[in-house]
Length: 548
Image (cartoon, rainbow, N blue to C red; front, side, top):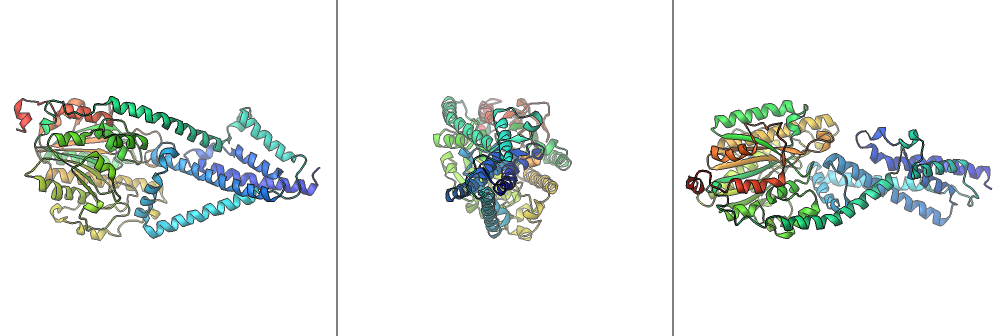
């Protein structure tokens, strides 16, 4: 038998441990939209609290409580990462693929907050985790005394609740408010692992079935001979920017102006949509899906495709006589994948002569990137091969502060020192991101800036020997779009030569700056095959083939 004082101590242990463990396990779930209206009780918390109350206070049981505390907090962090993945990438966490993103998160933090503040945040997080482990371990610590012959009544009741939930016979009202979050996250990760094992075989078969190259296509890209082709990905430019009432009031006038200014400059403009393989980040999946003709929606596929040596649109243009360039101002680390993809020239941050200030995470503003393209890439190749340039534009990347004006004097941009007045402009990211409504406001303003810059570049530098393709890399995070948003992105094509826009119109692109909302978008992986074939067969005899 258990004494009254011993029983009271064990009940008190239950009453302390249950809410502590319950909050640790369910708080990540409550971070998701609508999560607070879901489960209120984690059944693993019932089991953990009941076991802790039943154990005698011994050295091994104290060690067990410490280990359980560390394991539960680690599991809670994993569930927090799941919530973050849902809110930022619009998909579940996949540990098999996503562990490498920790480095990207660190670089985003240091870029947005600075090294010192980022390290302080990380140190504070580590202290918070340590405190949480201590709290949970203390709550699970045995109450003391010898081992009981039977559990207190409260423990029996709690065990019954857990057992009922486990076998699926909880009363309906209770069943709706209970969950097994640890079981759910563990089984989900096991399913992801099993899928990735199959994914390797599936994608290797897809690579083998795809065309090895387009070398046998007659007149490969002959309709683009002597033409510069510029493929520009605008960060976080998704279809929500056009049809979401929170952003349309900013973006609709901007697109109307794009159409008017393009027409005034004598340019042809058409717009369509494509479906991106990712949302909220990992834009390299979109770049490779579009240029390879294969659907790359996870890191395993990306790595397999790069390692396979399969040709891409980069190889098609090089074979057709173009000088191929990757202009990637966001790349601050080594990029061996770019070398394997076979660009003739890779211009990452270290290769770009930019003397202006970084703007939080953004290494340089889009207007400088476009100016540098014209000054250092296109101008130097005027009398040599035509250029195929792939650009990764980054001014519309989070944290979306500061918002710069577009400078009228493009020729005066030079090495970017002209942007020095904006070194410390705008709100600090940590201040802005306390208010989600203001974050969304700044997102729209950042995109407005990006498209305004595109418009200014096009009216000055796009002519009848240029094909400019501007598209979004992906939709922004669900925090911005809401859950369940389309993954479509706008695609704008501009040229001074109507013959270069005609294939896009034939494919269903709409004249002007707005896509046809009634036309379903194709996926990005369909682009390469269509593009190569559309621009390879001469449209009007030998003149088209020779660039006349």
